[in-house]
Image (cartoon, rainbow, N blue to C red):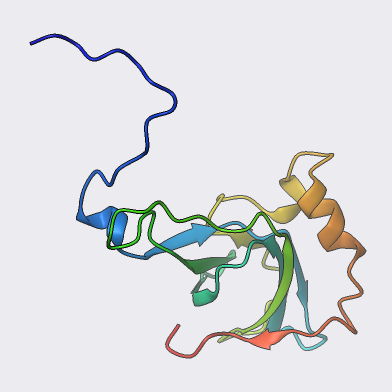
Length: 146
């Protein structure tokens, strides 16, 4: 069998059934701010157009980890046509209730395993999230079923 030469103009094709299905994707977020009583945390995320579908909250005595999940479209339509998403930046705020007041527990991003303050200096999304007036920016409730 002769190897086929590389062609960068070749049309992509689905590699399997998963390429035809939407997927739930863990996405990082960029800022957190607790409410005065510590029972709610506002999470600011700079992301794309994919909808927020789920939020997981893992509360330990020493820390809180919040993980955001977006629903991404399939890579291909059923007829094999590649899909794509617009390169648009969207700022989202989600209000996440806690079972116990935050107190002195640090908040970690479940996508990165880090605190937002640990994001590398110069990160455009983190800088934008810090510019948001969290008191006036509209926050949506955590998706039901999370």
